[in-house]
Image (cartoon, rainbow, N blue to C red; front, side, top):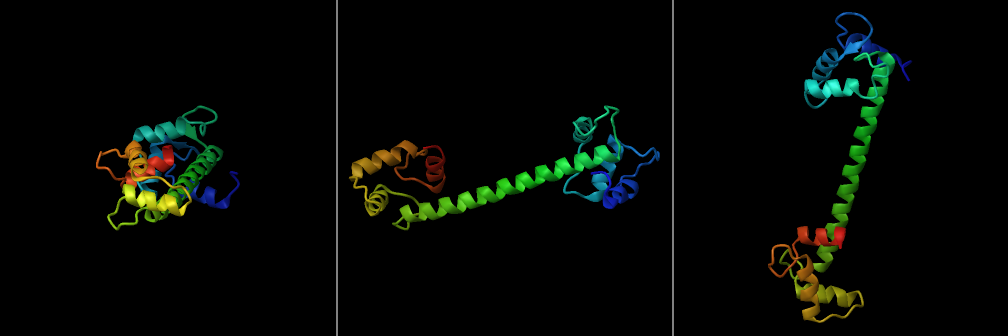
Length: 159
């Protein structure tokens, strides 16, 4: 893991190993993160927590090359997981919008008892208006008698 030429280059040049001891302190890591402009300035607390985490295997409060490599790999993995989750949420949201549009037939931007009845009929389930009103009422959070997209999403994800 630590044999990477790129990591060695970053370790040697970008981390401002100011005292030249071949290890990175929390202060040096914070300076590096700020200089690299990785998206945000990390607080001193966040950097200390990162150094004190499992990355600092020997518990000396400093990161050697191997420990830094482990921290970088963990951070990259976390970023990848966050991106995957965001893509999944986007896909889910797109699917929910398409489903909502199928039920929202009157052009009002909401699902009414009548539009619910019509869609259910298309799906082979025959309900009268009173039954559709009761179905909507269960998830009608603002009490307006119709389902907004937000309420529909809540219904689909919890109901």
